Amino acid sequence: MTNDAVVIDSLGKPCPVPVIELAEAVTQVAVGDLVVLLADDPAARTDVAVWCRMKRHQLVDVAEGARGLRFTVRRC
Image 1 (tube, one colour):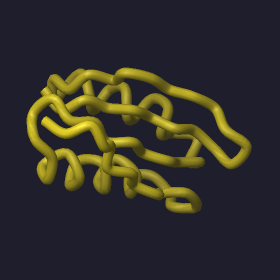
Image 2 (tube, rainbow, N blue to C red):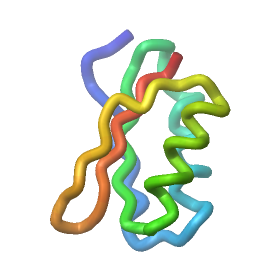
Image 3 (cartoon, rainbow, N blue to C red):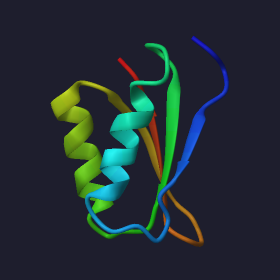
Image 4 (cartoon, rainbow, N blue to C red):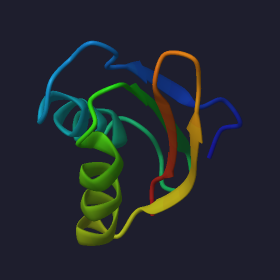
């Protein structure tokens, strides 16, 4: 487990690209590590939460920023 989160910039990318990029990134980090996904697609709010439940990863935080949403996901 590391302290640095991997950041995936999916701003401007339509559904389902943000979730696909999140899924790929999660496989590249150790269990317990964080992946941060930046996305502005409106469907991402629902899609990321559902994906985390289905894959049993922890959605740690969802924060709104000036350009979109910032999802913090912990690999479980």
